[in-house]
Amino acid sequence: MKPILEFAADHTLPATLINTPALFEYLMRVEGQVFREVATRQTVKVRFGQHDYFIKRHEGVGWLEIIKNWMTLKRPVVSALNEVRAIQALNQLNIPTTPYVGHGVQGWSPATLRSFVMTEDLGDIVTLEELALQWQTMRPRLREKRAIIRRVAEIAHRLHKHGIYHRDFYICHFCIKRTEAESRPPALHVLDLHRVEIHPTLSVSMQIKDLAALYFSAMDAGLTRGDWLTFLKFYQPEHALKTGAGSDLWRQVQARAHQLYGKYQRKLSSGIAM
Image 1: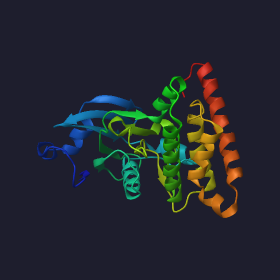
Image 2 (image 1 turned 180 degrees about the vertical axis):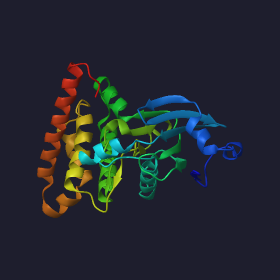
Image 3 (image 1 turned 90 degrees about the vertical axis):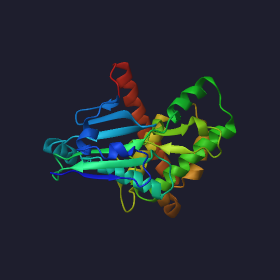
Image 4 (image 1 turned 60 degrees about the vertical axis):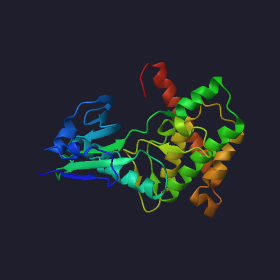
């Protein structure tokens, strides 16, 4: 089946590349620096012309994987189109993410789809996870730390208000370009949209899961009660504004985060990477 290819109108790819015969197959096979590789997915960094790009490639996941996901009440991710739609959704909300360049899809069966999404490399970045590690030895200025916390909260609020469930909502998936590190408020980019789900409205359960992942991933950052209160102030959960259930929601977030942290510590002690 002939693949479908689409590229952003303002893409920076060289014309010689765009005119390459069998371009879909070429981009599915071109070698680069491998950043992540699992059974049916691979992320590579490549350079075309004067720009660096990331290509996330998906091979068919198979019916067994799809059925297994649905049986555990998880929506299966069968192609790069999931990330393409997520990037478009964040762009519409003016939330910075990796700049979309193009994508391609081949096939029609969800079990055998082959696809890719290409994005521009953001360049020299620092993730909030890396920043949190720095805070353990170099205490940040309160004003700067609170500005970052406020921005994370505002992004979380905007995502959830518009029915966007990240599903990997950890601080390592927020980053700042080092060239913009001094800007206020900081321009935070949201990364790893591979598993994002978009719903008409977000359930309380999904909201709690995202927030618990965020809380868990920040538990070693040395945040104070004032820091958490700053997050809550600017997050403003939609359902809590209507029902007054904000404190109850936060207790559920904390409980789930501590469960995740306990599980993480047990895996560390047993030598298993999470």
